[in-house]
Length: 435
Image (tube, rainbow, N blue to C red; front, side, top):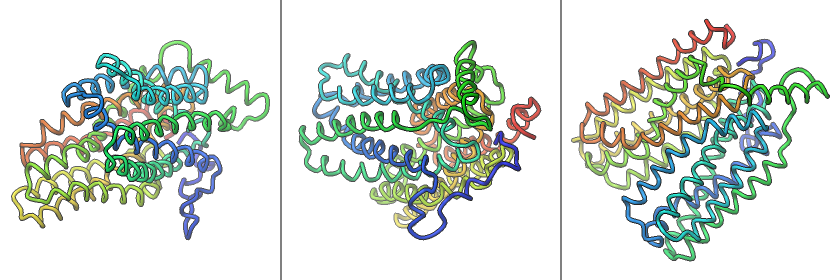
């Protein structure tokens, strides 16, 4: 981190270590953020579980038209991240985030009223712009409300809460799926919209310190204003920061693992192995449980940029091993194929938590305390682009090519992870991070 080593405590030092306290973070700000995150993700899980069926069955959209609309919306979301981050630097992360989250809620509610395909595409693009912009600004807000040496550990804790919330929301959504009625689907979508509006109110009430440095009082507030003003004027500093752009690109390649899990593994199981179809559900359960258990511990040791780069390197190698194991499931008996796939997904989960911890740390470290909105906006745009193109890359370049396809993906992930080290050394030579 940018904080001198003597002043930096390991993120793990403030984390609960035993008993019921493991479920409750000791930092009051993280606890407030966790409550907000839980509310938001329960609503999102509820809506995601019913959205596709609602759009296709009750709005009458074909799979092709829905796919086009969601692709267009994804592209709009990618483009929104950078200006949203710049807006956060200019006007402050909290007011921009409150506006974007509220807009996401209103847009989500609008799905229940939309009539006609052009209106649906426009609304989907609006919701995506607000949602992806909010994601970038939310990461900048974490930089404002959490000390530098607690940001990555705090985000790890919130990611655990995210997984729990999504599981709860999906479970509730299963009730609507079972009822299979228009009223049930509308209720689920409106509940998600209401959760966004409630989250906007909670973010508005969140206390944001004027400055994260050592100064205090009126001088602190003045510095915060100067920092935001400097960050919001002129050219985007993140777009002129070569090492940061390289780290963003490498992190985007590592993010292909999400398409690998969500698209590649299910297609591989169903089309290329004899494993029972229920294995698809098993892979999601294994991934979710391991991420919940391992994400916070994975942040330990990533306090320094060099250590964070090493975590990314280890992640790339573990993800490569995961790909090779998954590829071995082809041509094996059903039970063995299912076991091999689950082992491969377990390795993917380990690689996932390591890569997330490492890239989160680097996204803050290479920004220092300069224009967090701009830097998080660019970084989030890279992640969003990977999430948008990932399914197409995995489904066309991996599935159908057997072990060779998985090996190629594994080599790409390993190369991206290992390249983080040289990128950080470049940043150190430029003085962007501490030696």
